[in-house]
Length: 115
Image (cartoon, rainbow, N blue to C red; front, side, top):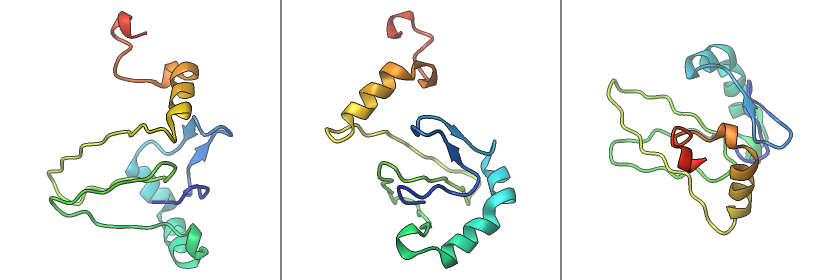
């Protein structure tokens, strides 16, 4: 996980942060940018260093707003449940995104009443 304000290697966000260009897959990112990531783990200032962890069965991890992250599954069978949390602190940003970036919202455009 990369802290807010620190963009991972190979990730290119738009100036407003709403759109991101990045490799097509985790495998591509690992192939192209893993060595730079390892270098940052060793040499970046402490508050800019990426953090890594291994989540074991039954564990839960919370990724705060603004933290870049990716998942590498280590076992053959994996289950992940993800949820985007909306609170008072980010409600304005969420409403703006829903209003201005409708082309980036997935999962409901197939229902006319949802548009």
